[in-house]
Length: 424
Image (cartoon, rainbow, N blue to C red; front, side):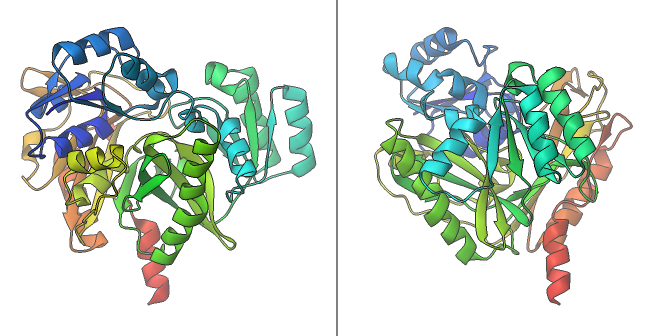
């Protein structure tokens, strides 16, 4: 098979790395790809939103299957466009992708199909939203309704923070039109985890769970980011809870989308929180998570290409996983998630040992040097017999490539280690 991956970040590098291992694959392409991805796939500089050029590329290169990494083309309707051209593509239609493209669509779906989530209200009027904040108080969560690259969420612990957050979203338009409609949600407490599933209509096949770390700094301090690292499995989340989440959240969501006449095919990502009342939804995404993909796929022993082919035929595949723990830590540019410089020289990436998995997110090659070219620069994943071993190995690797231009967290997985210490 010839396979095309749409995207050029760390998640797409992990996807390309996994897909390249399949005996099913003759030729692997990535658009736009990256200098990092070019080690495993042939890259072409086509914008992910230029559907006409993407489809022409797929036709010209006799692509048998296209996999889409980022949310923007999915929400924009790339799947509908490809299917009209007779091209096989794994992902949700533009209508089904609204589960990520519009927080209010997702909330209404959950309400209708009795999927457990936080109480909420949606606002397009700043004054009405502000009045509601004064009424309900803090802590509270504010979300830009549209796509905001994982950064349009403000967790406000005080009413002052909430008012400031509302101003950022609705008046300052930090996330442009994504913030013209705002969802204000009840603040939930508990252990968070990510459950991704491969879906085709009502067929839902869960992947191994992961937990990502959204805050920029150690101890879960600082602003929200697109994710500073992740690990899998998540030992403090019992398997019974994962089974409950599948039964009460993912399966009803997939069945609900069928009922709403926009059946979902692709990766349905549920960002979940284990509350005293059981698992509840924080958010849905319509694609592989980033950075969760970079720790979940290294644990998958099955052939991902074969698995996706089975799913698209409505056949339930048997997935197999290693018992090892994967820890992945993001190296970010100084200043991220705010403003940061590009073109800064990175440490010697060749200094990393062979068993360190290196996924490029925002890098560029210049001669023999690797330079920063984004906020999240790269991610290093290690597999270990336990979480501490894997994390220690990652931290040793990162020290070898550390420079003044970047920063990273050393405490990925600390929730699991703290939970284990409490039990002991």
